[in-house]
Length: 72
Image 1 (cartoon, helix red, strand yellow):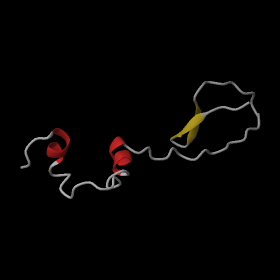
Image 2 (cartoon, helix red, strand yellow; image 1 turned 90 degrees about the vertical axis):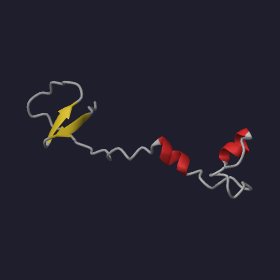
Image 3 (cartoon, one colour; image 1 turned 180 degrees about the vertical axis):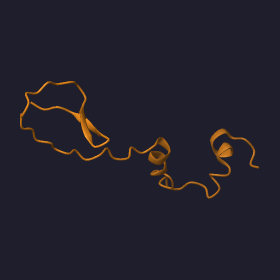
Image 4 (cartoon, one colour; image 1 turned 45 degrees about the vertical axis):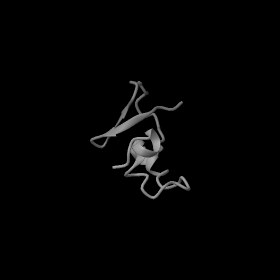
């Protein structure tokens, strides 16, 4: 049998209320805290600069290269 919970102000609070007999021995296993979940921007940034053979001014002139608008 196992229960999940969270430490709040130094006390373990179970996610679901359970009644255990007084004196019941328990084992507490600490799970590692949740790791940082990267944002969409962080995930996309991993790909920055990875496409080969782009024009040197692609960042400044992307509308020209993608949509055919005049260069600024």
